[in-house]
Length: 153
Image (tube, rainbow, N blue to C red):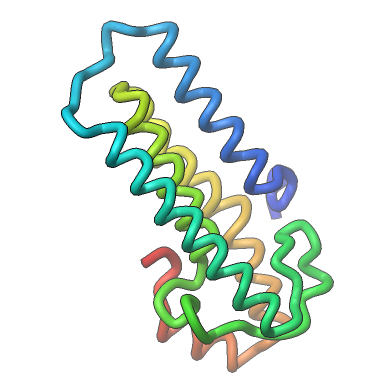
C-alpha cells in the first residue's frame, strides 16, 4: 500500500481541492467563463451531494457500523441496502457533486480540470485500500457485492 493510502481524510481532501479550485480561479482569471444559471446549478449539485452523503451515513448508522474512513478497523458490517444498492461509495460521490457544484459556482476552466484529479486520488488512495480491507474482512459476500454494484454510479 502506498504511503498516501488512507492518510488524508476525505473531507480534508475536499477542502484542499476546493481551495486549489478557488486559488486557480483567482490566479488565472482569464480562464473564467460565464454560464447563465451557474449559481442555481451549483446550489442544486451541492444539495444533491450533501443528500447522498447524509443517506450514506444514515445507512451506516442503521447498520451500527462506523462511517469514519479513518477507522476501518471498527467496521462491523457490510452495508448493501438503501443508497448502497446503487453506489458502493455514495458519500464520496456526494463529495464529487459538491466539488462539481463549486466548480460551476467558480465558473473557471481549471476548476473542472481538478475534479478528475480528486476522483483519481480518492479512488487510488482511499477507495481501493478500503476495498482491500473489506475483501479481507467480508470475503465472498463482499466480492458478490463488488460484482453487483458499481464503485461510483
